[in-house]
Image (spheres, rainbow over the protein chains, first blue to last red):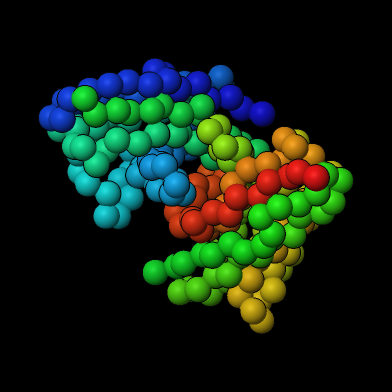
Length: 107
Length: 121
């Protein structure tokens, strides 16, 4: 199965900061990548699909970029409610696979 | 607004079969593909497979030999059966809607709240 590697596995940042999370695929997946936010006790919530398309209702401080094997999720002006674990997911190949997650903590 | 709600046992014995249902509301079950996923406590996400109302399905090779998915259009319910359970199958199980764009696979845009299933004697 196609593997996705996220980095870092965790980070701590202050409110107002800009945060970048990286997702690397072990083979090219064009732009078939989604990003999710998951808070404890809740299901994942879709933020971005097609690598850079913002899901309806998601704040514009979230953005995604990349194609091929390297992708990034950027959170501008980090807010306290952004404390969560973030996952990338590829949908270019079956089985669908996820990155290992990045836990974002607000200082 | 599509809503999904999983139901089923919270505790299953080793070697038994897990049967879960997912009630779909707010939209037609015939209009989408539906996925099942799971997440062991404190760990990451694993896609189990998807099913369409006509029976078309695609399973993760890692679980294919033990999984069956189905759709009951009269009740708007998805079903998952996972056989020969063991401790590593302990996880929160989710149903989700699969959305397709221009790619072979799908992303998941609506999720159920999830159901913790523990495999233990």
